[in-house]
Length: 276
Image (cartoon, rainbow, N blue to C red; front, side):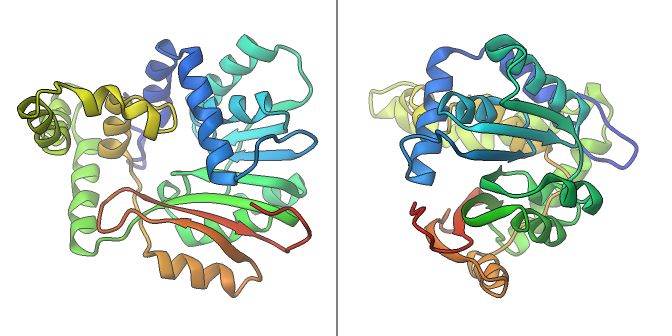
């Protein structure tokens, strides 16, 4: 894991490790996750934009579901991970383009055109300019298209606490980062592991995590949470009102309640028959 000059965590390091354990089961879980959140059984004949592609897993899932995919990420190693999956599963297929770019680069955003599905799960709150990123992303949705976005839930003071934890982690030398990572892991998973043990079901929640976590391993998810900086969040109604003013409606919302995880939104630009 590397630290860059602006204190931004390079997520690609985490995704490189994740790809070493990627299996067909996890890919199928990612496909099911996409179908569930979009309420579509296939993406055949649809264009799919993956903003902040990370490991490339969901770009791959969209491609396998029939979409013509375009992926981009700000982090060079995340781009390398996405390219690795592209080369591994669909070498030289022109229906999947991978690029390095930023959603905050308005000239690049304008060059992209419009897409039937725009997907950005757990990305835009790490840009350092979340509301501008949210604005730029929604301009890429075609009329009748879907915009799937997941944004960290704003918990007020607790979110400010986590922001300082993340900032501290990224300022520490590599050899000392375990002082943040392991206590946080125990804080997040310790009670669950103990509870499963007392119920006579050791590690059941851990083993079942892939079913509910989009094919992502629980350990990698913890690392992603602890180290992800820059870090912002928003309350569900703030995101809803932001997009309502921009002419998109919200047919699907899944909140994290009072938790620190992501609220999932699916917006639709216009009701032209493409119903989630």
